[in-house]
Image 1 (cartoon, one colour):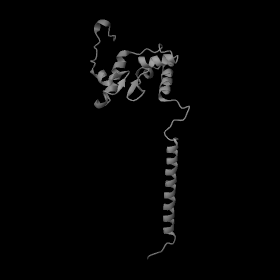
Image 2 (cartoon, rainbow, N blue to C red):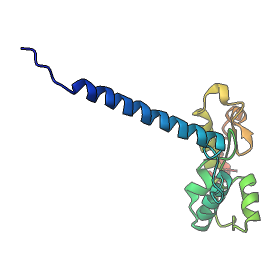
Image 3 (cartoon, rainbow, N blue to C red):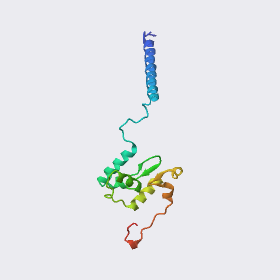
Image 4 (cartoon, rainbow, N blue to C red):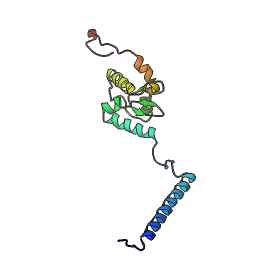
Length: 156
């Protein structure tokens, strides 16, 4: 039994026309916005990455958040990672009147965390990636210092 459903072809072709029309309008709007410079640009008043990092370090210093301040690596620029406790970042934080002396970072723990961070990076990038101003390749080549019993087990 063959039934002729009238209007069914009209609905399909009409729907297809609407879908193509809407997609065309979306593409045209996207291209206009792209060439006008509205896409890809950051609106004024939005802080850049360095300002966000400085604010995060400031909060970590004021709250004495040792884990965040001393051992969290923040990307500042292409393939450059710093902790808030690095000399570079502390210099910047001092310019912003942040009290950086309140947080005491343990260098032995930082050395271990830095090596762990660098070991996670692929070998081909270890010459390019810097952590606290030193390439990962250099960090991984430095032998681990042994803690002697004569100094009571404290790291130097």
